[in-house]
Each structure stands twice: as structure tokens, then as C-alpha cells.
Amino acid sequence: MRTPFVRPELVPTLDELHRLRQVANGTAAPDLVIRGGRVLSVHTGELLDRDVVLSGRHIAAVTPFGRFDAQQVIDARGLVIAPTFVDAHLHIEYTMLPPGELARLVVPKGTTAVLADPNCIANVLGARGMDWAGQTEGPLRIFQQVTPATPAFPEVERGGAVVENAEVLRRLGLSEAVTLGESNPFDLGRESTNRYREALLAGRRITGHTARLRGEPLWSYLASGVSDDHNAVTVDEVLERVRLGAMLTVMAGSMNDNTETVFSDLDALRPAFSHICFCADDKHVEDLADQGHIDHHVRQAIRLGVEPPTAYRMASLNPALYYRIDHLIGSVAPSRLADLQLIGDLPDVRPELVVVGGKVVSEGGRPHFANNDPIPDWTRDTIHLHPALSAASFAVRAGSGGSWVQSMEMYDGYFKRAFHAELHAEEGVLVADPARDIAKIAVVDRHHASQTLSVGFVRGFGLARGALAASTNCTNQNIVVVGVDDHEIFRAVREVQALGGGYVVADGDEITAAVPLPIAGIISDKPWETVYDELKEANRAAAGLGCAIGSPFMILAFVGLAGVPDLGLTELGLIDTASQQFIPVVLDVSGTTAACRCPSHAHAIHHLMDPATATPGLARSAS
Image (cartoon, rainbow, N blue to C red; front, side, top):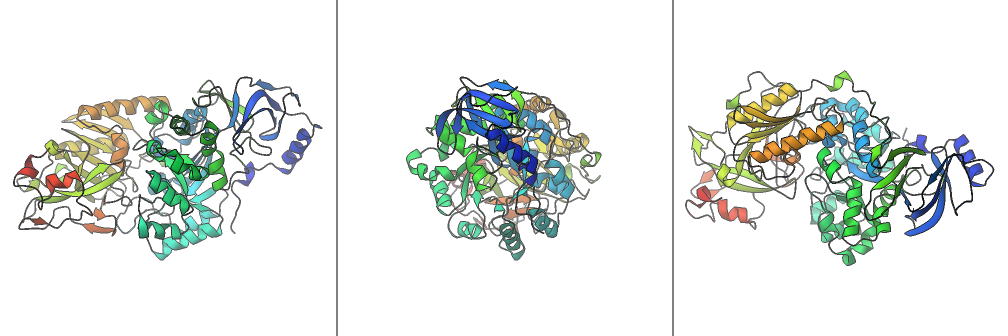
């Protein structure tokens, strides 16, 4: 039986609703009055001199000053009372924190609700992992975006756990489900189409991942009922999607921050303001702590010229309305949950007080609560490598006709531009070329202890030496490693195993930094402050190898993603994402022509490395 209503336990009970009405008409005493502040009405964009009157966990009334009294009063003079923020699309696992620790970090910043797709932990621990990642005793409301397919790309990756399609459909009817999670825009099959239909029948939105597609592929994706997108970067991309009825979810994560480009032309964008909200998507603990969460989006939007009430609405009411939970959260209004933040300076977006469910949970940027969520034993010990794995496992043999390889260049975060390059071979094995920033990239099965792995080549990390490895690999959460030497690559992979999962920096025979992630191999079991320090040190160690990427382990996790053009890499091989077909790494060379898969030669990288345009010797010497 389908349950069309999301989180009915958050709606007032009969007794609560009855008392709300009595408090609002003055026949029952409020539990709390927040007095003397200016209420931000995100419905109208006004700042109103009002008291906010609470009964239990809900708002009973918003009244002129002094209308009601209560034993507990919060003095809000000089402060703005605003709704707390909603992250409209997040993978909690990529924060590196369990939900309770994430709450300790982001609730004091004003975020008290997240729409979370647990596709990472689903690929390791299956359905029960999704359940564990979807709840916390902390004051963070988690609305689940039901992961649509595990593994996400079953034709081209094996991954770890399997969540059957029937279980996905069942979960769409659960009250904690608010959307169907993001899906593969290149999958036109009937099974995925049926999931879209079931989501529509269940009254759920469908979260999109358009991969910046245009024309027919985009139209086909939205024709399925997909109703939002967090990949649009330019104003034109935003307007195209909004005109087609999709909510635009502006992403600012560890890999890219789209706020600058999205809000670059406010005159053009203004008609779409009511159809814009915010998400972090994939954001590490370091960036959440230093930069902020949804508060960062709001600050950026205001700095770029958006009026503060509009920016706050984008972070609260807009997502609540669109995802059909505005009866629960998103505004300072009667019958809504009393999830409020008191702010001294609207453009600065730094809450002095945060209230969740009628209780003060944070003051002065510090939480008033601890993380007491249990970590089950079954979430640990998930890294299983074949004992015969060795440095030789990562060898790529040169082709008999030449040494040209299909490679990928990272840009705009996790997007990958296909190109091909000529590589040198030593004793028949192709080697990386750090002078041209071409490194080896490998994905290794860590779920089944098999010898299954694949190796490709990537440009963009800037490694002069060493290797970086991680057990957070989108989407199948295998081990991914990038490096310039097979022995260092192998050393880093084995250290990930020794940690029980995590991030590793290898320099020669030395491990110079490590971040243990023992929960499913993707989440830490330590306080966020400790994880912050460990990650900062790992990023510094990576920079010491020449890595120029600000968030190398997050980028590393997405190099292989088969749902983002042009190429992907899973443990089974290199993939052309448009066709979802395997392609060779070592190219068939006939004369001076390589069988290139590049969709366009418009980028400078091809002038350096394409045999059809490069002068003799240029491909070998270009930097």
C-alpha cells in the first residue's frame, strides 16, 4: 500500500493540534515565546516585528509584540527569526561523517533538514545500510531520496551489495521517502522507466542528475518525470531546465561551487528565483567546517546581488514547497515545526541561536547536543582484497601497433574530457607521464576479494610522484587509486585495506598520511573535529606530491563515475558514458590515426596529443 504522505509523525498529533489552536486563541499558555525579534516572512519577503509563539515542537502563532506570555521567553531583540535551512540533495557518506556527527557540524550553521540519497552505503551494505544512514537521534531531519539502483550501472560494474528493484519500489511508499534518488540519464530501459512511474504514482518527486546534457538526451530524461537538477552551471542551463519545469538545485560542494556562475546574471535569472534551491551534494567535512553548508550558498547569493529574503527563501521555503514538505518545515508559520534560527546580520548568515522542534539546540555556533548514535558491528570490516594482488596487477601492456591510450582529463569537478595520448613503454608496459600530468588510475574490487580490477589514464591531478588511494568510489565504492608508479599504487591500495577503508597518501615506500574510514569503508567513527584534522593533513600530503586539486580525494572518488561524460572507469573496464559500452584503453593505431572516442577536438588538450594534429615528437614533449 502506498503512503503518499511524507513523515506523518512530524505532523501535530490530535492532542498537539488541539493545543496549538488553544494557545493561538489565548486559552492555553504557550511553552515558549521568542519575543521582540523581526520575523522573516519567506512567503512575502518582509521583515515583520513579531513574536513567535510555540506549543511543544510546533509554532502556534506569529503575533504582534507582547500579545502572549510564557514561563520561558527568548529575547530576540535586534535579531531576525528565520526558518532553518534545507539541503535539497546530499550524500551524507561523502561528508565522511555519520549522521549524528554531521548534525553536530551543520545544525549550528542553520541546516536542520537534508534530503539524502544513501547510494554510497547502499553499494556496500545494501538496504540496512540505507536505513542506518537515514536516521539520527540528533536534531537533523533526514528525508530519504530512495537510491534507484544498486549497483547503479549493473551492465558495466559489479560493485558490492545488491538492492533488488522490488525493494526500491517498496521504499518509494515509505513515509521517510521524499524523492526517488538521482539516476543514470543514459539508461532508457523499461525497468528504470517503471521506477519513475512508481515514484510519480507514490506522489514523490524524482531527483535528477542531468550531467549538463542538452537537446534530445535532456528532453528524454525530463520526459521520464525527473523533476530537478543539480548539475546546471550556467544561467542558460538553469533557464533551460526551469523552463522545462525542473527545480534547479544550485550545487556548492567540494568539487565545484556553481553559485558564482548561476548568479552571474541576475536580470536574466530573476524569473526563475522561485524555482531555485540549494544543495551541497558531495562536500567533505573540511569544506563544511571552513566554508559552510547551506549558509554558504545564502552568503554567496547575497554577495552576488540576490536580496537577502529571496536568498533565505531559496534555502528554506522553495525546497519545502517543491518537495511537498512545506506543511512541515520551510517557514515561520503556524502549525509548522518550530525549526528556527536567530540571526544578527542577514547577509552574514551566522545563527546566534538555533531551535529545532521547539528546543534550543545550538548557541553561538556550538551545539548543545552530543552524538550518541550507535554504530553496529556489521558496518565494519568491509575491505576484502585478493591475496595475490601485487604491483604487477596494475600493468597495462603496450599495443603491438603503438602506444596510444584513451585517457580522460578532469574539469569542472567530476566532469571528464576524453582525449588520447602517446605513452612510453618500459619492457612492454605503459608508464605514466608526470611531465604531461598523465597518471595511472585504477579501480580495484574490494567487496568480493576477487582479482577484478581495471586501469586507465587520467590528467588533472598534477602528481609528480606517489599515489593517492581511497575506498570511496562513486558509485560502486570499490578502491580507486591514482599514481605514477605501480609499486606506490599497490602500496597505497594495501594500506587502505589495513585501515579497514579510508584515504591514503603514498610517497615511495612511506605512507605520509591516512584517514581511516572504518564504517563501510566510507565513513569515520571519530568526532568531526578529528576527521577534519586528518583530512587536512592528507590534503597537505597530496599537495606535497604535486597534486594541484583542492579536494583530491573527492575528485578521485568520481573519476570512474559512469554517469558523467565522457568516460568512466569501473572495476570491469573503461566506459564510453554516452553509449554505456566498454572501450579499449590501448588504442588500435593504423599509420598515424588512432581510433579516438573524443566527441570534440575543440579543447587545447587535443592539439597537444591528437596524432592527427600533433607534429612529430610534440606529443612526447608537451607539458
